[in-house]
Amino acid sequence: MSTLEAFNAAMLPLEKHPGTSDLASRNLSQTTNNKLFLVCPFSGLETFIREKYGNDVYFLMVLGTHFQADDAGYVKKVADFILREDIKELYVVNDISCRFINKTLKREPGFGTKVEYLLKQIYIENYLKVRQNNDLREQQVKLASLNVYRQMHVLLHHKVLSRLRLKHNITIHGVVTSKETNQVIMI
Image (cartoon, rainbow, N blue to C red):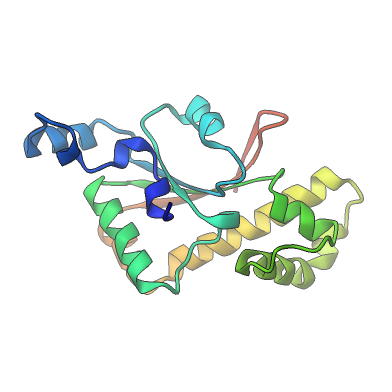
């Protein structure tokens, strides 16, 4: 399954639903919350987010919450989706139970993915900030926050996405969650 196929079922082209006209399609889009959440597919945050933000939200599954900004085709598909669904709020979400966060903190070998490399770089560059507290939970929150900040920076400064954001008044939020303790930390 491609990354874009990992959006929630409400994203499926409405022409696949018999009896739905273009006008009805547009009205369905206008009744949603117009929120898109970037989440790691391994975090299993969909239910948690729906409990907090309602059922009419969309998900973009991105490994380790690492947006593929260097893939022009991918960015175009995401931009088209944002326009089609009139997304007004974009949330970059990282849960502290993220396997990539925890493998980085525990210095365990990974799978050689780009997100692992990037998290390791964030960790090295911010080692003292992350390790200033001996509490693992605090370290998880710090590294997850730094990862979210980095991804927000990528989205805010990406040539195509920044123009889209400004032209269509799209707000970008950063969120660190803990499903385990039912917490949401806005960044």
